[in-house]
Length: 481
Ligand code: NAD
Image (tube, rainbow, N blue to C red; front, side):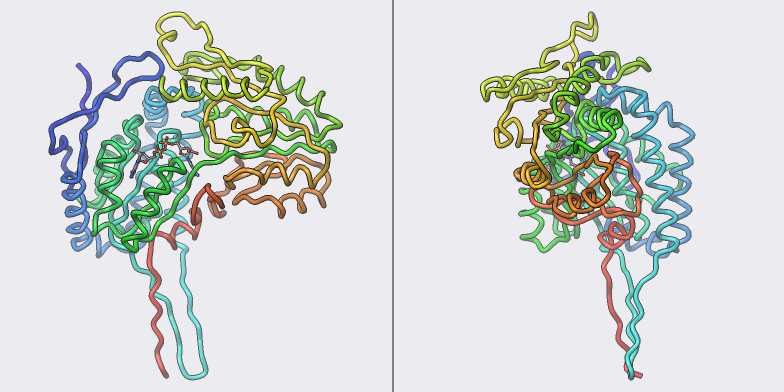
């Protein structure tokens, strides 16, 4: 029998008011993994009401220390169930189990531990005048809506939930309808550690139904959204019309910029990881590789060879580098970009086709990792977000040319720069129109640093004190002496 995942509202695990469900289909086998409630505005209203009641109840009296201890307890449970939760995440997303067990779930543990520690140490301003003092109180916003995508389900939900609870808010969360499973596990764990009912409410369902209702609800005071840029535009517009605080973490078309003075072996390895981690479905993936012309042929040959040797297949197999894409529909979108690349004059250096994996995996949404050369840097394939295992590679002349190409897209999330010239590393990092630059590495994360993008990649920053500040309101008190 197919499992029916419930919503979690006011501490009750329950179906949607409509009684309707949606199938959650495996992208690995094509079978139905579970169903989720097809929630609508009525379920969101119930969740918002429960969240409001909870913020007026015992939760309002919890000290910072109690909230931090609760986050640590959540981290301990996730860590103790790491393999089991990683298996759930891998089944739900199609990503390799090894990736979920070494990145996604450990990162969820780290998010809870980090924000437990951060909030214990957080302090606010005090400003003295000749005849007065000012001090700044920091208060919860109230209820916050958390809307998350499918590529890193628990990783991103925990990235928002931990600081949000740390600052004493209540939550209405909606995970992606195509990866709902680990959010339900999190709701159960929060229940188990004794979070008061109604503090964390989980509403499953479609974006334009449940998601939209969260953004519109008058009692939800802020929205933290991670997802696509076009959805972000709708969320941003709806939230700002209602004067809600909003954080938008959106799409990317990130450049991996390789200079001829780099350590080529390390740069190839870094560019492969940046291009194809999680089947290229990470907002930070380096989907455009820009290589200085003197080493272009050598780099391209080594890069293509490494990519063509990556293993695609069963996500449960520890030797698998790439699992299935998130859905069959998404694979079609990615394949349409490969076809477009050919029309735009590109050469498929490797990949672009479906692997033959045998039953039952032949029913899955697998695609070989793909490298495309010969495209104009302003072509659609080289400038639009594909969000799959497809990387375009382009030569450039000098620093100015590299920066011009890197900046010629509408996105501005991240970049990696590969060079052994320190001055160049600083100059290029400063000139790139992005929120985050890595030099001689990729996706090395310190949870204290600002995370977010510019241009169509988003508005605002999360991470460290940026998250604690986003999920709270400062209030200044000035006392005349
Ligand atoms: P998406 O925008 O389709 O969906 C994201 C979430 O928004 C889902 O939960 C969805 O149900 C919900 N949603 C859809 N329409 C809505 C509406 N009208 N109102 C409210 N909620 C709505 O994105 P996706 O396809 O799930 O995820 C992939 C995208 O996410 C990519 O563009 C990727 O770059 C981006 N992403 C960005 C970051 C980042 O930190 N910048 C991280 C991960 C993913």
